[in-house]
Image 1 (spheres, rainbow, N blue to C red):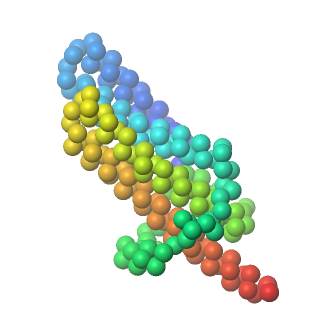
Image 2: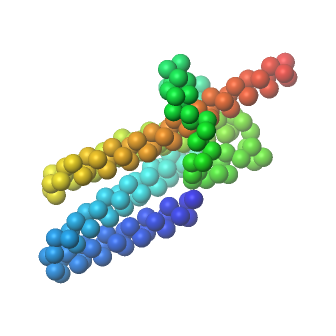
Length: 181
């Protein structure tokens, strides 16, 4: 998945630069529209890669998942049941599946990776709204608002998935600990 995301990001950058060049040489508005569209998509992809990289370098999957923020609330459990997270969570793409491999990592390490992934997606949700600022220069606020909301909702899916799975991993760890005692 990592290679695919980097490849798509590169293609989006090339498309953005190409349409900027075409607009500047022809002043045809369709090229400006395409440059803005591909530029916005490029932003969403590069921002995700950069946020993930920053967290990987600074935290190295060492996150205290015991902190209050990371504890699953009762209302969340109801929401996850209603949204049937259990049914679709395994079909979602994973940037680096090795981080969640039980053969390579302990359950504690996996829980920390899940917590870091949650943080990454929470920050991405916030940064998803930055393109709205571009409406100041380009107009078309509804387009920037809609794409920002859609991008944020997409990442909220991953936040829910990490929280749901981490809660299950923690329960398994607690059961194993009780058996050892």
